[in-house]
Length: 302
Ligand code: IPD
Ligand code: CA
Image (cartoon, rainbow, N blue to C red; front, side, top):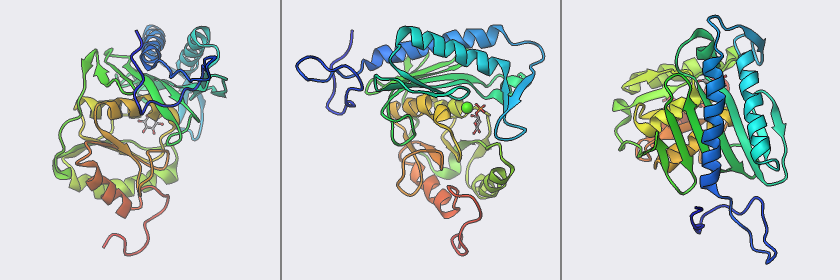
């Protein structure tokens, strides 16, 4: 049964009763649908992985690959969601934006960690989120989401105001610890110039943390902050589909997900972790100019 709306619930994206009152979206129903869709797409991905996966196309660069399975899994997600909620919009990594009329948009990453999928490294996930408002990081209201790890079946879910769960168990982000004792996940973009900048930033971050992990799926990195396998995570260049579901998982687990210089988490920069540690990493990344391309202004590292 739907739980009552809370004062900070988002405005209704859709139904307006004849009285003129708005009906808030049933975020628990959206979460359950997100999970069902993610599991269905993951079944397809798991069952259909040939011994040798071929690259179907490349996107931003020669190393930014798409497989037939990315395309098939996104088609399956779109078909299921259209059947269940035909008025909603859909933004997917492979198929772009199909606007809806309800005010809810599904944000889909059919395989987050495509390079891992290509190589048979078992760290790739299906990510499905429902958002209200523009489907853009910072502008959206995250309603519900699911990140389902295809290889081992770990399933992170969240619904706005109802907490985050891993395989049904409630999540609480680990307590803050100093940056120097924090295990920090990160990731890299697909463009050479961006990677040079990311390497420059990494050179300064690595000596200041417990260690770095580059797992290869941003959605899983974020979810692992929520469930304690990572203490912190930062990355420049995330797309909405990398971020949507997993951002809500971290936030609903009591963690902080933010950008730099007081901005929300977005493509420019996403930093996640315990509210007590994130500011230390944010300050370092700001000093390094990690949210802009090119070296920081002279003197800013003194
Ligand atoms: C990528 C992964 C990777 C991150 C990249 C993403 P994809 O998504 O999440 O970990 O570093 O920024 O683009 O291409 O595997 O869907
Ligand atoms: Ca992705």
